[in-house]
Length: 392
Image (cartoon, rainbow, N blue to C red; front, side):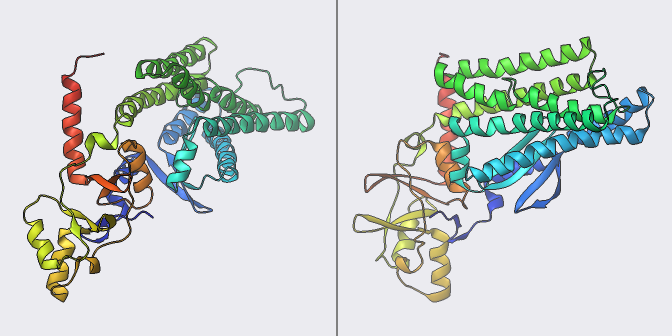
């Protein structure tokens, strides 16, 4: 059971690094509602596309209203895709927390650490990756069938495919293009996520993973060039969005590859003090004077039974007078093993509510602890040590 404690009290989720990431993402998006418990946000890129759609309409002799309608068709295609992916996530048991809508698709965050870990597996990535393209292509073909049945005079093959002057034809090709582009092995598209996972699994190593991401950048440039040659402003914009996304994936990949290699034993504090559940609060406070620890593992004999912070000891002494550590300690905590991945452990903990201290166990023996203070210090030193190593 996971809890996050600060001075013996729950710490709000907005104190976690994951929350800071969400804050950064929210700065480039705005909410449009909450549906079935899932927060839905839309990226500000859509506002740029709205302006471009209206400008494109005026260039082709159409009204601004038709440009707005063309933009709504893109939004509809993305909505159809993400609704299908959300249903797929529910079918596979992935509980969603939020969805961020992007012009080339969407990004999902999950409500539980188990769902986050399951969604990151190659098998689940493959399943989720095929949903969006299949639904967009299927929806486009359905619209094409409707158009040929009720408006046979509309030539679906006439160019430009995406024109505000022919919204029915544009709706067909909007979905077909969105589905087709997402099948390309370019990060952060659906096909790119699958390809990167398979590439890294078979080749291994950061350089090969970067090569897989680099392929996404090449494909993005190819889309832009194709858009200039056809010409098709939408292909140019899709290529631009893929290029931006590929660059962001590349930066995220470097950070993830570096940090994913860190194990708990690499950063855990191995010289630490423990308290006994039968210690008095006055004795515990006296012992805490001689250490820089803010939080202490509490043991009964050789067994770990809880954790207590220095501040909670002081507060209890002021409020109730002297007592025993077992009366103020928290019994709700989560442990790790020395060879556990630091990233996966932090994700697992912070997806719940976090923790002020994580005991690291080898069997039943405590061999180390992780606290926010020592983690920041250890990661800084680890980074400096890596920089001083010869480049491999």
